[in-house]
Image (cartoon, rainbow over all chains, first blue to last red; front, side, top):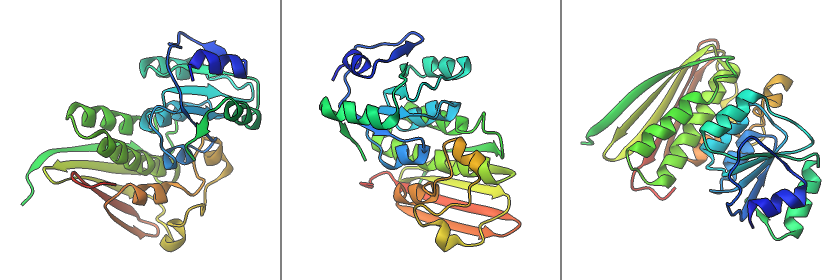
Length: 113
Length: 145
């Protein structure tokens, strides 16, 4: 599924310059970064409510290709800068984790966990 | 005898959540530049990252040694810290002594050490309460993970 379609489904705001012509097949969802690493799936979309620098570093380690911050949480400019350096698009939605997972599952995406 | 191709040492500072994980992303770039199998890189970087974050959360400081031979990748994290009184429990998924602050940072859910072991072909952990912990992970270059 194309990222711009996902963005529409979740009502996302794109934070910073992001490349949206990428495809996503798999989603990982957790506020625990070791959970993301334990269920590694390359090129996944990561849903998380954790907005600190470790969310981006975990995404780098786990080869996540896009991060969506849930529950209306916003990262700091420094986190956005790090994501830009690592070429990871960042989106944000006001929806909660459960609703995001449900909507993406209904749209055909599947979890790595 | 295995031929050593590369050896690097990194210092990791305890309680420095802001820089936590920086060393492991450096290691990822280094391994990628060596044109290693992406699966091996992924496993090695997960090991390094979990070991690094353990030091950041619990220890005063740690020294991460990365060595690569023509047979394997070895990551050793030697920390100066409180040590682990119950190693058997610490290796169980979900067992944790993390504080709320650590969990708010996204870590401390009892998955770190199991993740290190899962991604290792060889794994060893030694700990002395009041002194520190040494974790050694080996990943074979011809392993299948």
